[in-house]
Length: 491
Image (cartoon, rainbow, N blue to C red):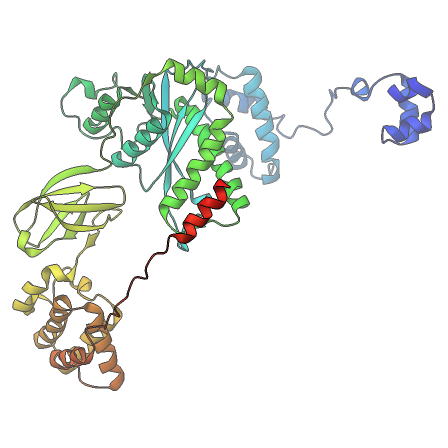
């Protein structure tokens, strides 16, 4: 129409509008736009297959509004098996949807909220399997602890391994120390990190009739100067800002990984630095509203709490400690002693008299165990009869070659004698170098020789134990070149 008003040539106007000349002529003749020519169809193109039984369906919906269309359809098929086919389900679903919209009961709606600057921070954990990040070539299964300021949508993400209290503490502290300010409230869902444990009896552990807060979580909020609050049970939409931010932030990470060209990182810290760079880039585009958030919050003036939990545990008669439903062996000299266990996100430290007696990777799950043969081998050698039914027997084979050696010894000396012969070799590995003993066992097996502790000792004795270290002389340093360089710069 615009082209026609310029020059009146129908062919040229149709070409400009990318339509057929005959179609353009019809529009010009009618003087109406395409949207004005559209009419609403008020007739059916085919007979309604549910017309005969629709009053019955409506009565069921009136008595039981929760019934789904599929359930109603299955009832009709049972009552009239020859009349209704599976392909008609979609038709009934549309009719039920229209009926509910026109005559159904009132539904609960979400009430959009107006956020105030500096009022609250929302925290949530989100899984990251879709990112398929690897550390040193191995798939890194982890989560992100995401903190969001709802008013400005400023966000910060911390790499973590579980939804634990230690992870929550680390995530919140990293975000606040990056921000440098503290909001009035901190809001989470009813995760096991903030709630679910038996309260310590303090009235402060209760959230207005909701699930009680953990004592550790309350202490964290007190230290940081925030008031804790949670969403209602099963109402994740009340944490909607951080829930929405999770998906958006992971999409940004996905795009950044595509640009990077690789999803592999040499260490977890490198991946965390990558996440931080993406978060800073996102937050840089929200400076105006972030400034309003910061202006409404008070300054963060506390020190950072240690990023671990500490428990006092007694060493069992099996020379093990039980930490978070998993067992770890410790040196047998600590049997019966009380030790302090520092529980980090990814590791544990067992301390006695301020000395670290065990530092190892933290186990995930329940009823798992990590037993070091060096902690128990001295008792096993003295009591070899207990090895056959020892509950941690499989942990006494540090590698395949040790298991093969045990099987060979059992062929020569079945029962307790074979166990004792193997335990003496394992004792030798604990007293010297496990790698040297493993090499000796491999050579003996390849040579077809009988495996004995004496043969292993002899093989180890042939291995050189010292290496000549060459003496290095440091060359004198000539500073004349630096003086000449400074003179050229001055000139």
